[in-house]
Image 1 (cartoon, each protein chain N blue to C red):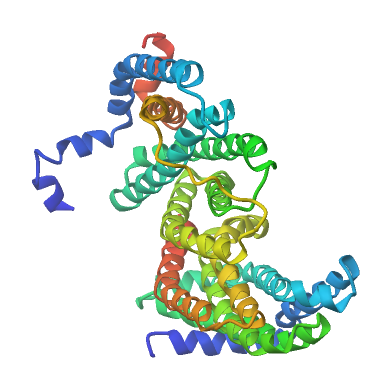
Image 2 (cartoon, helix red, strand yellow; image 1 turned 90 degrees about the vertical axis):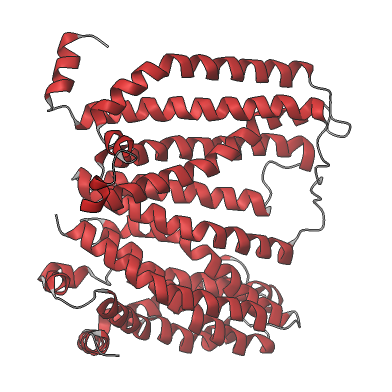
Length: 256
Length: 223
């Protein structure tokens, strides 16, 4: 590891990032702005998308749930990679902070995956005539939810934080290798079993008037995700570092 | 093939031979649970034939899953796993030996017994050879993937249920291509395609899973 430390200053930020205290203080400064940005983007996107975007020619107003469904699915997937990368950083550089990020990413990702499935089911009723379809993408999202639940369950099964961290990091990495395979095989499976009665309306390229609010919503969800990840990680930092002096001072002093 | 592979293969086979009852239980489970299908769904052979490929594959998966729990458990309890972990050789090869022994004790008997279940579930004639071939390759994948889960949960007191939670999503590609092999043979299509993909998955699993299992064992059972 010597060559790494000698390689400063470009690596200094990386090492500083490994300090929970530094992370706690910096994100504390960022959080108000980020929350404000997320709130602004989400409310703009929602009002624009739900109120002002034109109706869909075929689906009428029911398509508007896309403004929740698509961003949630985006981040459900991205969240898995964030979790796995954080786990990998933890395994390689033995940083406790990145394990905390990994642990915090798991419940957020699981909830977003559930939200994507749930809004998809609601959307499916008026479009496909049924809440649940064994469609390739729906099935892959369901498997993604199972992967998240596995990481969560493993994390909480260990008594020691250390072992739980490393075990769930390995599981997240194994899942990362598997995600492309799962996607491809579910695709194959679906083309083999394609049900004749249900036709997916192949979404034509979206009209810009519909697409712009979606873009705002996706950006808003990214900001919201970051805020949520920061908050979860900060709570985790306080829990795990409760014996350190700076946390004691922070809690006893009652200052931010 | 030195570096511990053959030693651990022989050792685990010998252990399984001495505990025959334990080793036979996945096979018995496989056959007994498949009996539940006609009882639960229908004894009508036309409808059974339709679902037979999927049922046999699901049962094989569950039977393998049931036995995966014990892959490292007894070694962990009697301390020989710790000996293996501190030995100087590369951990992946002995693990591959252990996994191969596990497959020879569970996956291979399942594969060999599957034609009997095929008869009982009135599997069409074209399905037998693809079923045996796909099970032979597929149960190998299942044992290898299961070993990663078993390595991660071996130090937990109640790892069994958790193990199935972890491993089940990773099993899904295997079952898709396994039953697709049998199904396409029955439907009169070429079945070499899905079988080849199963073989590719097995090759990838042989290369990667012992390494992941080795990492899991090292990181979670030594504190």
